Image (cartoon, rainbow, N blue to C red):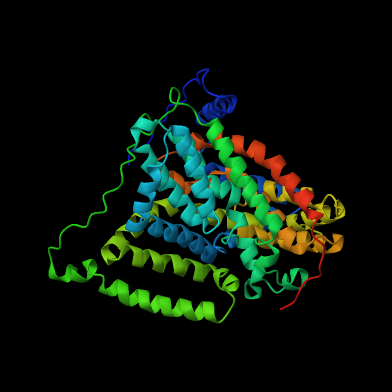
Length: 482
């Protein structure tokens, strides 16, 4: 796939475009000129956190040691995130899913209608899997872009395809913090006495949580459609020098006898039966909410589904090979985020405090039950920009924010959902989780962040208000031990 041109492609919005479309194009023009590559953000985060740790009194040698010692500490979690992307990719690129995507792409009658379809499809799919949402949304955007008669703005389509990660994913089944809290075996021993076990029924399946998710789907779709440039100002994939044609996945004819097993479904059937047998046992021995909360089980399910849906091993291997470039950003950046977390929690000043300790003390001392949802929401959103890991960041925040929730008698499950809803907000402008989608679309973060920044302007006050208002409908209950 060809790289998009480096020069700005933003056209002046004609008078026929609405105010939101003109604002989005101005944001996009600014981003095209000034928004750096995603790696620059993680590099800046390293420098900022290191400076803050030094300002807290930690010795230079201690900061450097924590940086190096922490660099590789999240490798298992990094690989789990890589496999979430790969699993979503192999499922989304299978022939049955491609047929579904092609049928969906025929529905829109206009470019803006296509933007609305992409937004709804990606947000709903994100409630099942953020990995599936990214890949499904990217492939749907490319499929719609092939309909040149619609003149859909490709950048706005990419921003709509990213709404699952920026708006709703953390309110669904792939919420890392909700998964961790529902499974006591996944929780650090020191955290369990503070939070207890919090089942999905007290987090993502609260009616208050589902109400927020529904509101975000509606509001995000309206903004996406209203801010999309019209036909006269739309910049299509073709205008950007990008060919959205479907990648040729036809298998070449067999030329050697040894290739027979690569093209035959025999191995797929046998492995699929083994996988199904294991999954049946996993879901039979425990509630499905607990089973699906294990990321290894979650990834196994998607990988095996992808193998069966591709049917022939060679097609599955081809899909795996195509998915790898989409994981490059995760592989190189996650170790840096692990190092940031280590600097915050292990580099100590002369009095023995860490930067995390200082933040925790300030957080608890400045809160009341009424201000807790707003304070925690703003704090989680800001920290999420520097540490974009729903699960890893939760393990950093949970000890002190959940202790504060206990002290202030805030519903513990709602505290998790405050984290979830607010933690997703910085994703709208943080390019880290855009990387797999950008790899599929052939775009850069600067191409879509103007549209997603407009979403953030609306989401931030809306989400914080809903988190604050709905908190009063939930009574406090003490931690429940397993």
